[in-house]
Length: 127
Image 1 (cartoon, one colour):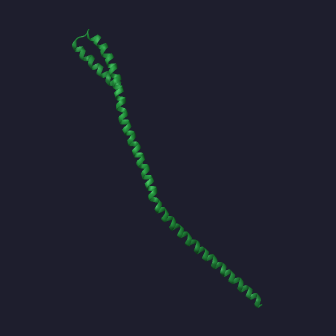
Image 2 (image 1 turned 60 degrees about the horizontal axis):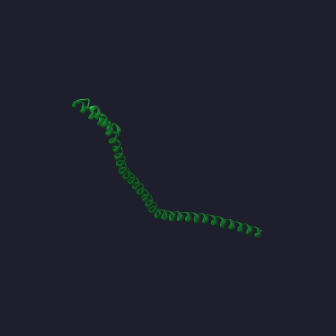
Image 3 (image 1 turned 60 degrees about the vertical axis):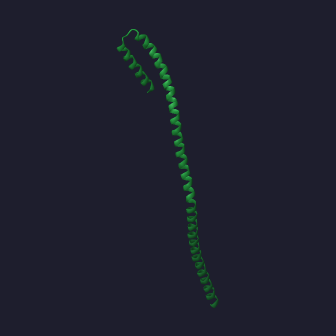
């Protein structure tokens, strides 16, 4: 009888030990989670400025590219316009040669009208 009761006591002690170890394991795991979260938070806080710097650098690069494109467009468009103006001047010269042949037949008042017509044709060609 004594032996059976001792065995039961041993079983109860073992169960108590198991529950205690389970509880301590849970507490240890919770403490480890808190520690890892705090460490990860500190690491993230340290990493955030570098990521912010990278984002800021990327934004600066985008702004520089936009400004460079604007500058290129500013310089390219006048060249294009100059080419277009040269084309219109040559075409206007052709028109003036045609109008001068017509001018010899018309009076001076009509001469002003033909001049206006050539300027209109220039603006039309620019557009």
